[in-house]
Length: 57
Image 1 (tube, rainbow, N blue to C red):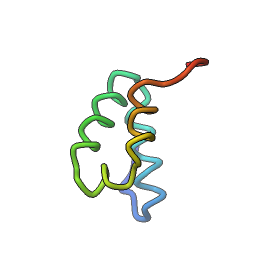
Image 2 (tube, rainbow, N blue to C red):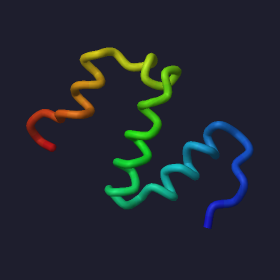
Image 3 (cartoon, rainbow, N blue to C red):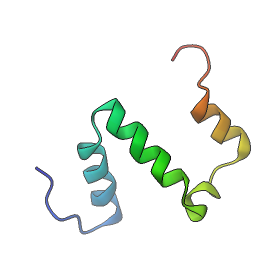
Image 4 (tube, rainbow, N blue to C red):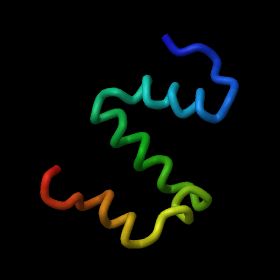
């Protein structure tokens, strides 16, 4: 069970713990990318690499 996160790192760890299933992680990732402040932190190339991973995935 996830306790109440205090630091940013604890929040990240809590999200990882809650999104262990690929379906949940995919939905959460998609939801977060709709936030302009989040999406702006990624380059266009980086966004494409996330959506269309290269060989080895």
